[in-house]
Amino acid sequence: MSYVVAVVGATGNVGREMLNILSERKFPVSRVDVLASRRSQGREVSFGDKTLKIQALEFYDFAKADIALFACGSGPTKTYAPKAAEAGCVVIDNSSLYRMEKDVPLIVPEVNPDDIAGYSQRNIIANPNCSTAQLVVALKPLHDISPIRRLVVSTYQSVSGAGNEAMDELFTQTRAVFVNDELKRENFTKQIAFNVIPHIGDFNKDGDTTEEQKMVDETHKMLDPNIAVTVTCVRVPVFVGHSEAVNIEFSAPLSVAKARKALEDAPGLLVVDRREDGGYITPIECVGEYETFVSRLREDSSVENGLNMWVVSDNLRKGAALNAVQIAELLIEKHLTKSRIS
Image (tube, rainbow, N blue to C red; front, side, top):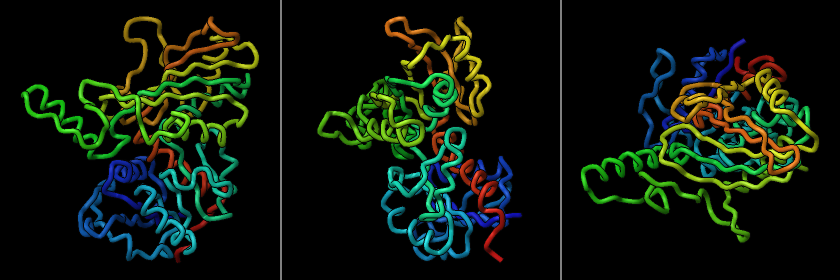
């Protein structure tokens, strides 16, 4: 059985990565339609060894597609996702728009696959925040054997999470430093080249940012609402790949050896943790990989039942495009057993 898949936002970082992953994983497609705004109509993008022409989103008939992967931001999603869903096309949305809606499942297949059954309420499935996705993949096998009481997370998020223009800004600022040009700042609140910025999203009244609040709320929705979570999100001068320093306090003792075994046996994870120079994964090494990597696993002796770990993943893949395609795979495996397109 094959399906018609529409990729919305196909000219952006995540949209292009969705096309790559659909091809790499040999997703059963009979046709792929690539959509973007009218100004991109007619542009070409690659899908495997094929070249596809961009169609205008506003004129597209979603009744012609089985599944739509949305990677176009909350604004266009708010307009077109309901239209797609009403036309019978199942929407898998990468924006933050629907994540906390009670009747929209928020899915990481390695973590809460059974929740996907709720898609039929609105024909919409939400993809989590990029930092949350890799975090819960690493937490799930540990939480299953010793419930987590408290999490303290510090993120080190690459500029690709803020889009193409943010990546360009890091490049141009870095070049400007070396050639003594003026450093122009447009996408970040501070200079990003050779700097780190402890600010992603908008500030809430309590001082947290919206990015930090997303990670708290989404972890509660997908994993366990009883976990106490505190997060600090930091933008770093890395092009692709998010990293996280994760401190975990469990409700019962969990040895490093047992935690390591659980992580090694879990789907979607790769433990690289040698206590020697270079025996850990950094962002540059995770680019293009499917797995979420865990390193620096060790006991935290400052609290009872505490562990520390370092979690790294390609934010354009597991943090966005890969997870969306995995959701589509889960959907056709469990629910969408045949195409509705004749």
